[in-house]
Length: 31
Image (cartoon, rainbow, N blue to C red):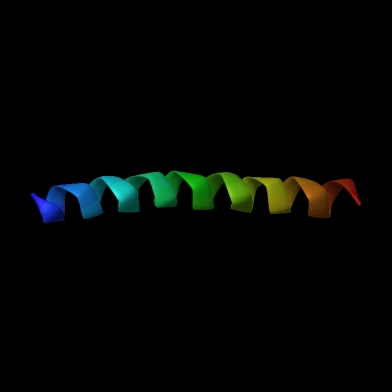
C-alpha cells in the first residue's frame, strides 16, 4: 500500500522536475 503511494508521488515529482528543467532551458535560451 505505502509503496504504491510513494511510487505515485515519485512519478508526479519526476514529471514536475522534467517541466522545471524545460522551463530552465527556455529561460536560458530566451535570455
